[in-house]
Image (cartoon, rainbow, N blue to C red; front, side, top):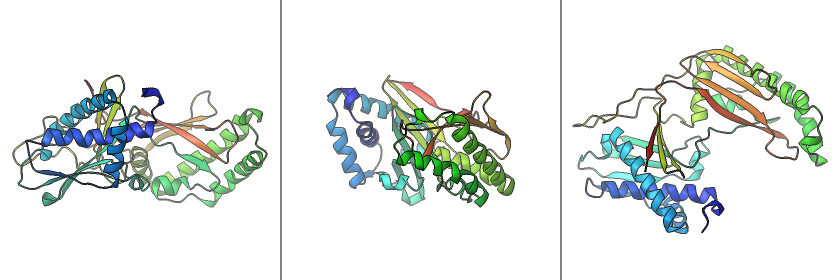
Length: 321
């Protein structure tokens, strides 16, 4: 099986199973645990068995070094409290509600859990869309956009629908940046500022939580890269990660991440008609680049959202294996 032909979804599911397998091997002689047998585990196991032996061996190595690093930061995993530690995979449906954690590690006797978001060869933020019907305020912040915002963007998206119905290509639209992208981004920035002026830091903090996929839960991101690197990144937004066990402190200690509370600037990137930059306090900076995801005209536009700046406490570890 050639690696490049393998579907990325298959590889991602296979890596989830590799993480469960790695954790079970690390805990085998350490403490009592159980692996929850559910449909998500069965699917991940099947995907793991579908890939080549070489891929399986590499994934297991990658998962093991990642899990060792997480155990170093979470000694409650190996603490023997005479209780049973539970390891499970969440279903994809859970992610639709905003919870992107794939692997759950739970000790019910002390009401403690951590989650791990598992990625194969990518570390993207959410790629959101704008359209005539998408209420980005409600989706991102839980605060609905105004009627004024929709009145400004609906005529533009209505024109795009007419073009879509005639199977037009984006390349056939003259000056598309100025007649489509710029007015939509202007309306987006105007509404974003209006929501911030009304709700304050609820907007800035909710944006970061939405983009990072925390949904009210701290988690670790574990990324397998094909260049024999495993990346571990804690997202300790609420301060629930990195807790000591009864007898042991974490081998690596880190702080709760400071969320942004103020917008310092929201404006077009210099000499750009497709990208706006958001600068906030506490070290946060985010870029929003709008683009068409298809060569054919569609009735929605996609955001490529990137972190341009982040707090020092939002760190990652790269481990070579």
